[in-house]
Image (cartoon, rainbow, N blue to C red):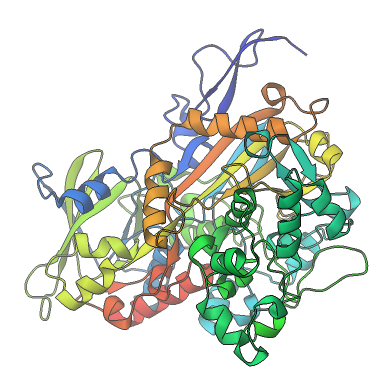
Length: 627
């Protein structure tokens, strides 16, 4: 192996200098001069998700009310429909509109990011010449048995074969390689770098086939780097159950829906050790929100520290207890397993929608055939295409030509490359973040304006790490590591899915992607959730890529065995998918999402959900409202 004289990351991809594999000045990240990457966003590393440049115009509009964007360019373009937002809901809106009104209808989709899909974003890592796929957000179908006919019909039209997932997902992978749910305690907060072979929470339970902890809870607690009193308190929390609530059984269900999880922990159980509080705050990832201000019931549904669903199932709503199966082989399983996963997550659905709308974008006639298809982004916005997808374009103003009640046209103003443009259409569907709608739609009724202004989102971060091999992960036996001392609360091997010619890693000597998950919380413990989301959002956007790289370096170096892992040698690329406006929080009323003249509202926000199926259903509703 050639000696590395100096090491650096340029926007997320490893640059080796000296006797190097890459010439000085070359780059494989954002703003790269390499056209094969700069014109193909999925291959970009570094700061992705809501990447630098994607939100600036929207923030300027929302924060300052700015309406002075310079001289406007009225384009000689007229559309039957303009869709604001190129996520799954926006793409589905265009698809449904085309199906309902005819494929000859002219549709423009504008998207403020440099890639489509919204949170259903494809991450590509090229590691030692091999393509490794991951997702930048939306990763799987959730509970497809409950999908509506609208969603199932669309998936069928896209070529989704639900039965194919059963053989594509390798349920034996984690057991075969001895990969468990564990907890990593770092030196920064807990005084030493240590792995304890127990997750102490229910979060890892959604990974089908992941090995359950083999050690007894008492033995696990004894290994946690806490004081003797801290260990006693932790064990008391972990052994809690409805009978430790301190109220009559008839009051259990009401009590857990009214009393704070942290109040119960502190005041009822006497758990006051700040390190245990940290473990509790960090134990809810993804949808959960802020553990220190949620109810006991919310903590139960989020799988928080000490909130074991099987132990507490008597107080949970029907269906909330996910029927965890206690397999005799010692692996996690649920009645409806999370195996409906493509190698790039739900980006495959977004890509197939684009393929249906713009056939020349790439090869493949169904979802499996496009998994390895490299899309030609130059085809997205062609003048002769009935459907056009315009990236890097932020909507800043939408107004009817005349009064909304009788106007035939709507004007949409947007910014692209700092230049304002205007297009004309017969209809508009807003499939963007719903909280932006009051800032960009002129003359919105006051009650609707006020309703939409209430909305917020939970900051979310998915980092995907391109590793040259995962021998250190196998040696450490990590399938998922809860990490209460780190920015990323959970680290895991991806879902072991092979399909469409793409093969999931099988040998520890092969490259792979490591997923690092983070649902940022505020610094003011006990503050209202919305305030904490705001604090976390500002903190997220204030960090540079080098800050994230340093955190990831510390995390992996402390967690993995040093005789098997060297960050400089083994990490090939880093993609940090920052979603400052991540999961929906709260539900908008019917007032907020009602149509306004020729304008209808889609996006999963309209359902108070962040799920793919809800995004599709809201698209269907919006199109029907324009009919």
